[in-house]
Image (tube, rainbow, N blue to C red):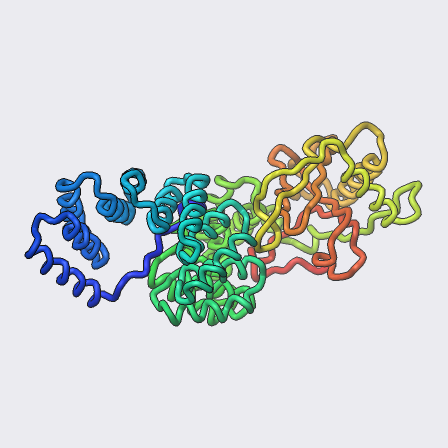
Length: 499
């Protein structure tokens, strides 16, 4: 679903008894004035509010037959059409209402919701702005405007709008959930939880509130209570997110059989979500359902041939169901993992001094440019990444030439651990010679880490020139040559030895 389509029209509806009482009131008035378009319009709105949509549409169209230019009737018909999912028709009715003289914050707010549902981000945002200009204290318009800002990646501004909506209407659950969602994405689960608890208390039937409360508790490692929230959200409104969160929490507590059941439901609802399939494969392996894990792993490899989790799941499942020594050797982590130390490059006093020069070279490269937001290593809001779009290598130019020498030496040293006659699968694709191509990435605060694996490459590696303290935890680890590793969640029976 497109982010803009997540905007829904939130209305403060009456209780069922109050809504039906309102309908009775308008019916009595209609008995006295059967051909009055205002009475017909009032009854239509009351019927819509009580959920009697078919009669509401017949009634409001009767009003328009008597008075085609009646703005209130066009507005009621627009609300009815929006609830039905006929967004284009709803937009037309809202515009008729505006044309015939009804210029209110409510109409502009609801027009924005329909435009957002049509993925008209610019039109929706302008409609919400107009609504707030006409009605500055319109809580729902503040909330919807925040949703439109969030869809454009402006999370902090969006959270200010959500907070304003809550100040104006403390019981607006949608705004509370939206604000809490932003807090969770910023790793501020402890702050979000009290707000989400209030949302659930005010609206026990809010699946989004329970879902976000589950995510917040999961973020804090409270898997048991997080699982309860995900299960409640799935009961109220089955979704891949709810079942996927439930599976994650159950797997974290090593209840793998139950996790498999949860992931199975999640993948039914989102069959093309490869991350869910990866988690499903891992849970199947952990639960001992190797044949099924092999099937899911094969699907994954077909969909994401460069996914390490897909390849690992497929390899583990295949190794468990086969006596082929080559397959079993893929799980021999003691043989696969070899530690080493990068030597100090020639002409530099220390590795740190070399990294400082390399850092200057990359950040001053003429092809460095900003690229879009994508999947990041860290949860939460992200900013754009600056990336060197062209190869950094240029003949024997330092300091990149020295990096190439270090990488080639590391790769050859690694391959020497495998005897040519061993028949190890890693040796099958090794080319007689290779050429290194380097690309640079500069991560801003909370910017995404691009994918390292290049489908056309024989091997992909990452050299971290400079790491922030959030990653190194204060250790001096500026340079790191990473040649890959096994996903630890794939095979709970085996662990990669620490080096």
